[in-house]
Image 1 (cartoon, protein in one colour):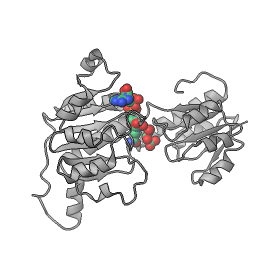
Image 2 (cartoon, rainbow, N blue to C red):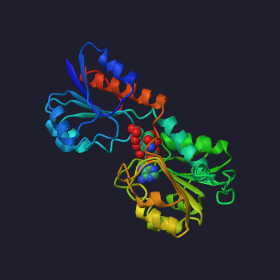
Image 3 (cartoon, protein in one colour):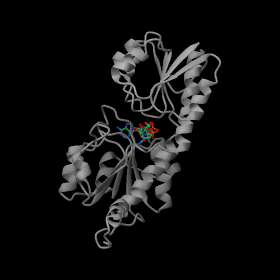
Image 4 (cartoon, rainbow, N blue to C red):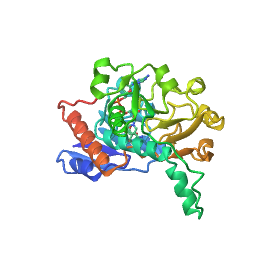
Length: 311
Ligand code: NAD
Ligand code: MLT
């Protein structure tokens, strides 16, 4: 029997594949402390997580039988990949299943930021009727700068074009041909930074992208630019964003992710120009079902010595 530990909430449809498999024993323990995880992983053949569980080198070393780690989602930055590789543990993710949900969430944040919907809602439920304070901007003919034109960036560009936005995209792997096919303008990072009314990041968090949007980048942006991050906390330097909002350079920021989650009493959250959601990009029934089914199938393939694709 293969023993699989699940330490973050996964959709029932994904879990069913495991619980109904004749050769699998599943242990679902979604509230483990780090030391409890070190104990629980000992006899396991595979570990399934979302983003909450931190799969450190210690966890991987403690998993003496561990053969696979499955991430129900895209980002694998909560998993120590070099440690897994050194210990012969395969890491697989589910990169396709939450693309649409995250693109839709980003677009929802874009529109709600442009029209001050969260601020207007809060003011209205507090008993005010303040129409002057929440005058917004149209998306029509505005320039959206997308940094990272992968799966989510591409889906977002389609939605922005439907709203008549000009889309500039920077991605080191973007060819002129692909840009034309998608209908976006291929740009340099400098162009995106200097020419956009809205800037949104959709890259992974890597050494190259950590603090890609920093004080220097904010200095080069247009006055009144609006910023979005529905990718990973840390791509935008949070202190620099705070200063740029305080100085009036940045008119608004919509954040689904933070460098440290949950962000607690983060200074950014005290600013009326900032709207935030608690890492909800992939939180739809559809996306959670998709990623759980995909990652469960991948992990079963690894354990059963069958071909798998998203390592
Ligand atoms: P993807 O791999 O399809 O796209 C990422 C793109 O970033 C690629 O095209 C890559 O070439 C590009 N890129 C890499 N380095 C870059 C750099 N230095 N500058 C510009 N572009 C660069 O990934 P995706 O599925 O589109 O996901 C994008 C991000 O969104 C990831 O960080 C992922 O973890 C995150 N995400 C967040 C949520 C959420 O809940 N908020 C949900 C899903 C994904
Ligand atoms: C991801 O990288 O897929 C996202 O962080 C979504 C998630 O798992 O919450």
